[in-house]
Image 1 (tube, helix red, strand yellow):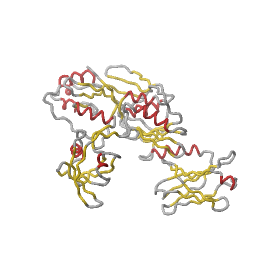
Image 2 (cartoon, one colour):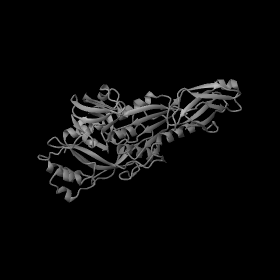
Image 3 (cartoon, one colour):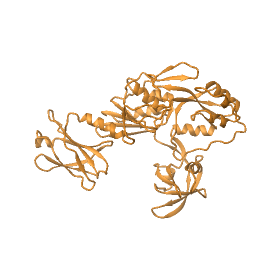
Length: 455
């Protein structure tokens, strides 16, 4: 039996790129599938399952991660891990009139065709789609590269409906996203554990020199390749083991982290949520067991099993659960998930982790009263420390750090005495929070900071 690529992947988020399952079972290799399942399925298969007369009946009695696929379906699955798709480049929501476009990818066929967020697709290839599921509609919109799809679009802003013919293209979504946050904290988000993920993370680290800490975002990352997880774990300087592996009727085996040339060079915080799954959980468990990072968020998904990809004699593919993995200290992941070090409200993981980094930098600074401002009046008058002369104050550096965001440009003016007037160069949004930091930039002079809340 030839097996290639071991996956640790759960739900793959696909953007208007769903595929339909095959319903052709006439010449399916049932006996071949039964033999493979009987020998390798983890942890064990029932006699009833092996007595199935069709492959779809057999698969229904296995776990949800074991799937029988056509060659084309497998290619779509693998492309999803690589974040490579054929489509028109939109994200959507169901609407009573059809499909509402939520966002459009830059330089995508949809953007080039003039579609806009808020538009509603009402027909696909001349057929009304109102009332149909998004899965059914997306299967009509997607197709082979360089083929065309005809859509009718209603634009609420103008009340007009127009027709558009769009050519489907290969769309490559970014797998690693980066941002320099306030206080020189580097943010790196990984969307999937694809072949190049470890290299992309290292390139991201190199692109942001001088960071004082790192936030590694694994929220809603559904996993990918196991060897990629070993490499990603190997970016942590103190990582030794990646995970513990157990196959059917086998002993526990320890797998090493694969050391990488570029490594995290400052403390790391990892963000998780209930959709952090599989290879992501493998990474989080290793970080937890070896105290490689501080974990913020919610308990992860709880998919601690691996799948092997088995090519069958007729060209179809069997994705079969063949093993379970644990954290290096035998941390149980499957159906339990990995608990964070710092439980955090949903949607507040980034703000909480970033805030902790900023407060650490401000530890020696004098905290002043909080400032609350409305969106209509954002200029702030700040009284500085008594020991700061105006001469010192003129040489000071003043920062406005958004918690969970970037440094904001400000205009600083002297009011009177030791008072400053701080005005943002752009209006700050309601619901955002900042630290206003005055750094004397001189030895033996204590800086000050205030928390600023925009209502």
